Image (cartoon, rainbow, N blue to C red; front, side, top):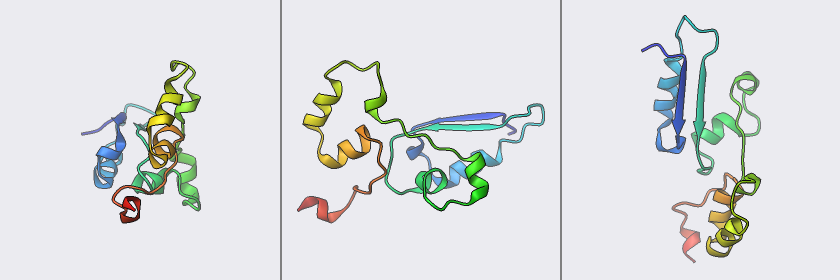
Length: 114
């Protein structure tokens, strides 16, 4: 399969191996630009973080692998009390990840239970 573009919604649902396979398929000769775009919530310091957000990444990747963080607070189209309600309901670690867009590690951590 020779592709020009790929879009993945909720990239944390695919493995790094699938991501690498998709990259290898961006090779269609009839296009000048090959793109792989993904949307997701932060999932800690996983493969997405390593490829797109980790400090000290390979300088070659900096030109071609760009990650954008869009916190919920930046969405001007949400109802006025939407974020306030989420902040009142979400635990601090959820707010950090799903409202502020931080790549904090918190799933399956035993200290979270105490």
